[in-house]
Length: 281
Image (cartoon, rainbow, N blue to C red; front, side, top):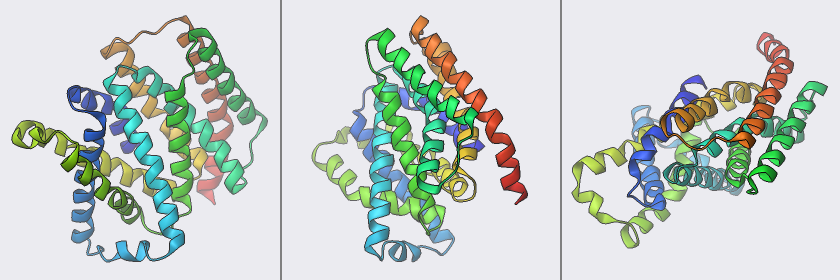
């Protein structure tokens, strides 16, 4: 989880380099290069035959398709927000995600909320409301990123397939659409620019490696614990947005982020004893 969050947290520095390439083209390249990497890993492990098995039942296909849709929306929105200079809002989304994750864990798996955790969720709601009212613009990017990634993590809990196999299936389902888009609508001139093509090819490991780590983690720890480690991701994104990209950060942002950080501190303090008990069990 730590390795995944470091890559995700610093990824705005990478995707900001693609300012001249359409977001959907980047998303298509990201899908295809990721699929090649996953296929290579599974071939090396002699587990390529597990992909048809994972997609052998309608239930698994439905679950993996839903996961694919959630992560594709998340990827595309994140890339677009980075390109248009709204990394501050993406960092807010991933700060909100742990609280979304714990609510989903409560609804789906019966994970109980303490009073402190419930207060933390309430503060997050207040923070989003303050930012929406103060800036007169709902932070829809933050909310969409938090919800799609939260649902993605929830779905991963329900999959029996291993982490590498499951994420390989996810990108496999979207690969035909990605290929069709690039052939018929995409900018094919990048294939004549070796440096640009190699840079786009890096989308594969930038995507696949942290996704494998994340999938491995979500199947082995409580969603609440996943949320705790996830703080590293938005913190690095926040540093990139404010200190490197010099994005605006006004009074309303300060109030909203202050409330979120307070909520996360409360939630962390309440969750640590449960995480220790879970490891001991």
